[in-house]
Length: 110
Image (cartoon, rainbow, N blue to C red; front, side, top):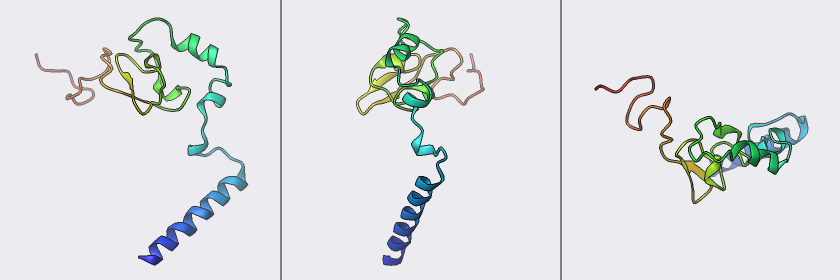
């Protein structure tokens, strides 16, 4: 058990050291506010909050705080709501989305 913990510690510190040294973009360092929206909150809000309460055109992966993360419900796609904890959740109600209990790409039987 001690050897597993030691191995995990070594792997973590070596990964952190290489992330700092190579200067490339890493998955956990991706910052939507800076890289996608250029730290311009007003432009982000004007584009995303168009007054339509069920905007199915939104891509939640481009949210200010990160993919599917939110602070207000207009950042969530369709009828999804911003839940406590800062994540969009629920069924979006958009036409192209399958029903919650339906496999993607299949039409419901009528």
